[in-house]
Image (cartoon, rainbow over all chains, first blue to last red; front, side, top):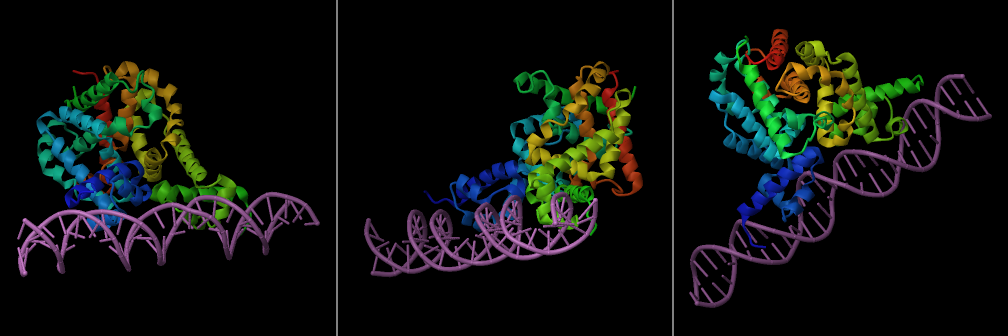
Length: 186
Length: 186
DNA sequence: CTCCAGTAAGTAAATGAGTACTTACTTGTA
DNA sequence: TACAAGTAAGTACTCATTTACTTACTGGAG
């Protein structure tokens, strides 16, 4: 095996992302991560200072990627919600990781979201009275994630839950819902 | 200690609800549940056939209670969303338990929600075109739970996140958001 | 150009703390 | 007394973390 610290570190992070997304922090196995990354348990301690450090690193990386790929667009919040939906559709790990983090390690979730604050708040306020800017953000995230977070017993009631068209329809429903929520009362 | 099988069983279920809500299935400790219930590990196996059985029982009970206390009201969906918000505010365990179940034991989540199907679907359809009945249900749940599921880094941006007035305002925002989502396009 | 220390990268196996689940027993009640 | 309810102390793991070791690359002295 060629020796490349950076590459090994990255393989470990990728394997950890899948492992923690699938089983969470308590259920995730260091051993599985190491072998999946074609590396060794010891390296996890060398590069990430243990299981906790590795988990935090995977979460931070997932959130960073998301902030990079789907930055808030205050001038078109409904469209942005659609993009967030797409991102979660393509990378389901991110959402699972966030949920796990919030349940198991809430302290890791508190800080990174400060990023979003300044970007959107000011703009969103005026548009949607009586909903505040924070209200709007909270609901947009909730709606964009709704399909992935709903229990299968509910989402499975659709005609054809897994086809590409169904996914497109869901995306459209997200955009529509946000549009309506933001429109002025008649 | 007086001997009362039913009472012991109930104490175990109550303790398990708190334990699993706090730590999830993988993180929940049978030992802690037993001592918190002022009982013994062995009883968990006698009454619930082990950790898995106990977890499933707590989830089923939590969902049953919720279906009982906050039944869908098709004629006032926005008001119903407010009630769901209240319920989650009073019993945060329920939502945490559901999230954990969906992440760790999705098979336990699939079935019980069939209950909701017939109750609401037919009625909701006509009102909200082009949103389908399932769309509407998915989004209402998402909005009602949005505040509890949002990371603290986001919800904490409000002026006074913990006062009673702030909670009332959040409830109102939930009702408003659902009302708007369901109103006809102007 | 060639060795060849020195160091970074990688490995295997032990350690020790927990953990779900079981067995063998005791106690209260009808 | 008989049986249901309850208890305590194992048993047989599993898992994160560490220790002690081996292997490959690098840069400078000969």
